[in-house]
Length: 253
Image (tube, rainbow, N blue to C red; front, side, top):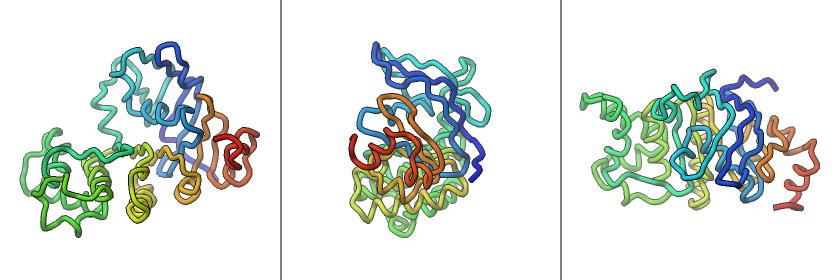
């Protein structure tokens, strides 16, 4: 299977003080596919995900070297603005982080920041992305209720709608179903699979069954190193590296 690259990572290193968290990562992440980053706890999965939209920068003692190119642009070039980078990325965290405002205003927040003021256009945008996130029918009669009243599963889909409303190229998910019940997890997984026709999706997961269900491409990290990557069926069914085999069979966790 041939993949067209959307994100190109070259010699990426991340240090937390003296801890070398990511070691010389060189990797191509395919366009309009779901890439799952897997590996044991503490292996650098979330660090790699955060490096893709420069979320590591505010942390004290963090040093990042190497290149992360999105559509050919190195996002770590000093001339590139962080806000420009983050507009390309929609982020789903482990725990939904709704804004302390209404359901409507959560989705409208990004478009307003980027200059959308027309009320009719805003309403159309909010409706469209709530539908994309499969939430519209559940909330259309209470758009001005506080978002905090939604269930956790609904809040995660609201965060997805909010992220998509700024027109990103890429959806990043940091264990986006870990706080959800099985039905809500299925809803989020289903939406991600549907959205990959329009977006590049990169998901950190500690659930191998989930990686098997949704991933087109697998990245396996171990102790901060890229051990193996490739089409999901290949890596999960016939891994080339002994450490990958050991992880998939539960010998290392």
